[in-house]
Image: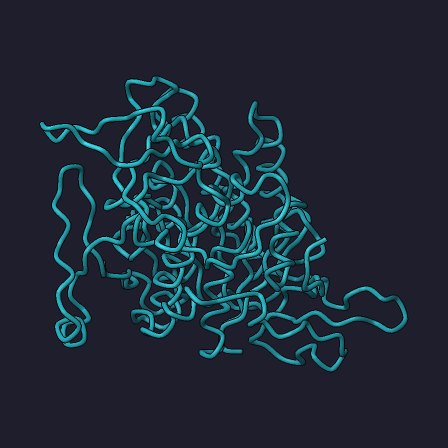
Length: 426
C-alpha cells in the first residue's frame, strides 16, 4: 500500500470508509476508537480497528500502526464548543501554549520530559478532554524521534472554533519539516446534503519547501445560503462536458428519495439553544441543517404553504422522524451502512461526512480531486463489498509503507498486529 492511514478518534468510520473506496489507489486505514458501540458499527462495516481503544495508550511504534505513513484525526471538541465565552477562549490559548512546548525537540529524552509536563497540566484541567487535541502532536513527534519515520501526510479536522489551534499547528509543523495549511470547509460545497463547517488542517512532509501551501479541495457544488435560489441542474450533456463546474447543492429530498416521496419541511433544534422561536426550518429542496447527536429531535412535516407563501405546520401533517439510515444519508454515509447499538444518533452526529473525506484525502494524498467513480462507489457501498479479514500470519506486511492487516498467532489466538479481525457486529 502506498498510503497506510492511522485514524485517531476514528468514530464510526467517516474517513475510513472513504479510504476503503480509494483502496484501489493504494490506500488502507486502521482506526483508534474508544467507544464500544461505535467499535461495533466499525466491525459490522468491516473496518480495521486497533485492539487498544485509547489514543493515549497507543503510539506510532505499536505493531498495529507502526507502518502507517499517514496520520488523521478529529479529536473531541467539547472544550472548544464554548469558544465564545471565557472558558472556551482559555482552552484555546492553553492548547496553543502547550502545543508549542511539545514541538521542536531533537531527541527522545527532551520530548518525554515535555510530554510529561504537558500531560500533567492537561490532566489537572477542569475539562481534561482539552488535552485530546494535543495527542496528534505526540504521535507526530514520536513517529519522528522514536520510530525514525515521520508521517508523509497529516490531516486533522474539527469544528470551526478550533481553526486558531490548527493555524498555530501549521506554524509548528512547518518547523518540523511540513508544508501545512488550515482552512474551514463547507460540506454542501462537496455534495453533502447538509450544511456543516469543518476546520481542516492538511500537512505534507516536505522539509525543503515548508512554506509551500498544500492544495485544498475546490467546491464542486453550490454553497447554501438562506433564501438562495438553487441552481438549475442542466442536462446530461452539460454535466458531461462541464464536470468541473459547480453543480446545484444536494438537498434532503435528493438524499432521502428512497424513503420520503413527498416534499417536507424539517424543524431543527440545531443552534436554537432550546428556544422554540429560534428553531430553523429547511424545506426538502434545501440541504439539511447540521446533523448532531440530537438529530432525532428534529421534527418533519408535510410541506404546506398559505396564500402568502408562508409554511403552515399542522399537527396532522407531522411525519415520522428521521431513522438512523436517513440521518446517515444526510451525512453522506451509504444507505446500507450497518449502524449498531442504541446511541446511533450520537455516532452519526460526531462523524465526518464520508463524501467530504473523499475530497480531503484525495487532495492530501494525491493533490487532485476525487475520481468520479468514487462517488458512485460510496453511494452504493454495502458491507458485503468488503473482503473477509484474513487470519493468516502471512498477511502481516514485512516492510513499510503499509498499515498492518489483522492476523492471528496460532499460539495465543490474539491478533499479532493489535488490529481487530472482526468483520461483524457484536
